[in-house]
Amino acid sequence: MRHNKKFNHLGRTSSHRKAMLSNMASSLIQHKRIATTLAKAKALQVYVEPLLTKSKEDTTHSRRMVFSHLQNKEMVTELFQNVSVKIANRPGGYTRILRTGFRLGDNAEMCIIELVDYNENMLKEKAAKKAARTRRAGSAKKADVAAPAAAPVAAAPAPVVEPVVEPVVEAPEAVVETEETPAAE
Image 1 (tube, rainbow, N blue to C red):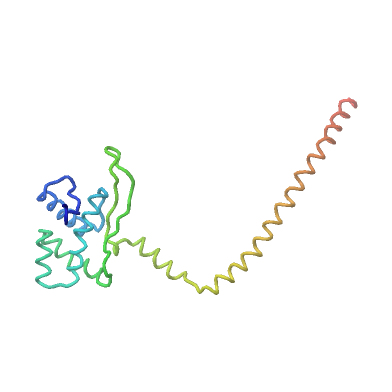
Image 2 (tube, rainbow, N blue to C red):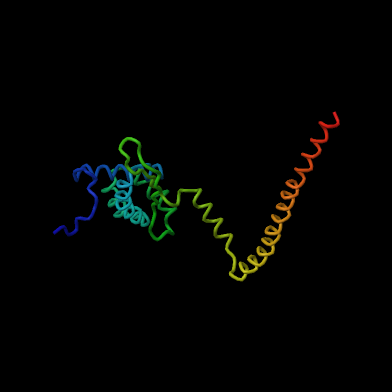
């Protein structure tokens, strides 16, 4: 039976996998966003989110626990001083995976994994959506205003069709005039 053997080995030995995830977690904390394959990003997400949760509580014990995973003093300092301040109010879900397509050489699915609170573009869009909220009663009024506006649009194509028919009737008259012109010459 394969109980408790759920995580992805990523085609590496245990020591290689631990070192790779530690280095990727350090890079994510340093750069706030890294590009990698989807499988590695999912494994990194499982690896780094508990570390980010531990960083919310700045104690000697939590620093040592995080250091045992990262093995990088500068990144531990960065995590506890800067990152933990930004994620203090977030109850989990500190990272986001954005799929970017497939790699040319081996067609591996690529993605960007980033810290959620550091993507300024997404934060601006979220703030704009919150400002645009209205009550349901207001949306019914907007629908009533939009309905009369749609009626003139429907009436506008009818006059356009009529002039198209009239030039067809005038075309034979033009032919008659061209026949009279050669006779006059």
